[in-house]
Image 1 (tube, one colour):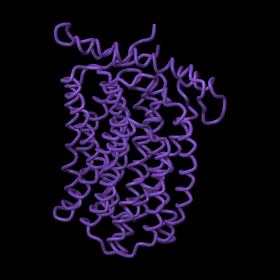
Image 2 (cartoon, one colour; image 1 turned 30 degrees about the vertical axis):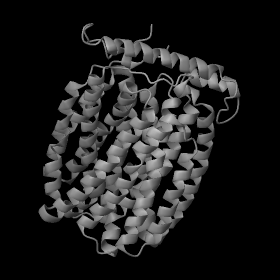
Image 3 (tube, one colour; image 1 turned 120 degrees about the horizontal axis):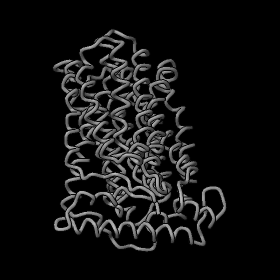
Image 4 (cartoon, one colour; image 1 turned 90 degrees about the vertical axis):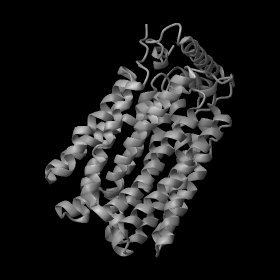
Length: 448
């Protein structure tokens, strides 16, 4: 049977205090076994590319990389389009005479709509799967791109940002669920591969802005509607696989399963929310204002600042790839210790160093902090195995929502105190990583 790190959650518990935890773990493992057996024997399962019952059995037994690749590619396309907006902030600021506060409000609108529906979509889909919602939601992103290409005033820019964010809000919870369904015994790896597609898309955004949008102007954003249509086609195919493989996640049982005592679940979820908050605020400072920081502090060009932002995005990709497999191998808690608190020395140093060291430190920060999120998501999904969609929606939604609020707040601080002050203040955020001490020890079970 595939090992689950939840089987180790009770390793440090006493029989008197944590009997519910141990019993819950046994129930969770039994549910997983039933789900895999049901999936393997399902007669009407249709995979993404043919071979019905055989592919279903293989999917139940191991990691379905073809599906993970498809959902990761969709995440790549989705985040390419999302990354265009912050990447062209300097151009929009100049062309439309925006203040830093207005730039922050644009990010707030995008992040708020990108987070608003995520927990709702996740909760609804936990009760009734929505296989084709991802393709439908991508239509909102398509409309937002077309409007962004033609927007002539700040209100229209805000509306365009809202539409792009809405598409993302529908996409992430169900896409994360698909990654979980196809993960087999390697949920950390699957979550990393899913997220790294988005990271590649986010990294490509500044390059596309530098070499396409800046030379050809705001109207060239409409060209990316082709990307949205391609994403809709891929997501429709993923939706077909999802619709016929629901047994991989649910099995035949519809009963809720408790995997830990209520107290431990509440404490663990609150800690994970705190870690997500810290990571989201600091990441927002880099995604929204790093180019302005470089321009103001080192007098680099807009294009050079975007190329340096690309280096940071590549570092985020590397960190995401590393984080999930390390969590599968050594446990989520160890990864969280290093990936949040470990960034603290570098974030504190960042506002005080020269241009070369700024590039080096932001790359290190990107690698270290990005390794946290796959571990956070999988840890929470293991704690709440019957709420996979809700967990994904909550954490992705919280990440987007907090980042949006932070962007607006940090934009106001930049207007009043300067952009360098923002990075000196945010440099202390990773100290929140000390909260990891309150998480239950969660090492993956070893196969015998």
